[in-house]
Image (tube, rainbow, N blue to C red; front, side, top):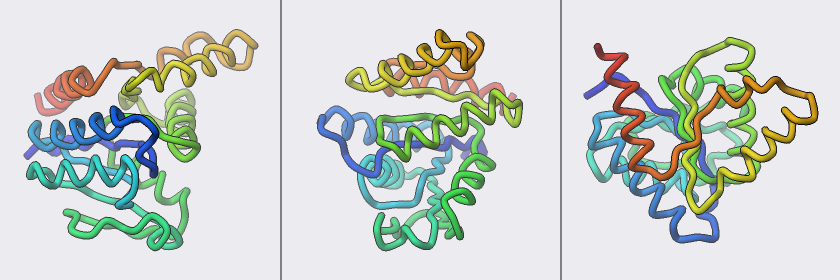
Amino acid sequence: MSHFSVTVFCGSSPGASPEYRVAAEALGVGLARAGLHLVFGGGNVGLMGIVAGAALAAGGTVTGIIPQFLRAREVEFHGLSELIITDSMHQRKEMMFARADAFVVLPGGLGTLDELIEILTWKQLERHAKPILLCDVQGWAGPVVGLIDHVIRAGFARGSARDLFEVVEGVEAILVRLAGYAGRVAG
């Protein structure tokens, strides 16, 4: 098993398109088959529950990190390799960050956008140099990138903000990118 860990940010809802579920399942299975450790938000709901369940079913190792107050609301995922209970959302994000060698962002809502923006900001502030991959499923990443481009055009961020992340079309391409990063870390 690789010691390379991938933190996945994604929806606590399954989303409107069945393609989101398909992508989450494929990512979970792909991480497990590649021997990459999954770190996720610890809930057994939405895309996050799907990606974790798929990884476990395929023999992968999975760490869930969930704040105490969300354990009932997001229905904590039982049977994980490791479940960490935090005191706050901020502590959850700090731990998800600390345990990541790379980040993958699947479609999601406000929480996913919050996690993405925070991890981009931390990279901009040089708190890390870890890869951040936006997995574009059904065009989900387009409006997110559009907002970042708008912020750049409006003069609130430098053009180099676009270099903080990479948009990757689909899960197979994400897995190829992750294998490359994991290989560099191992080698």
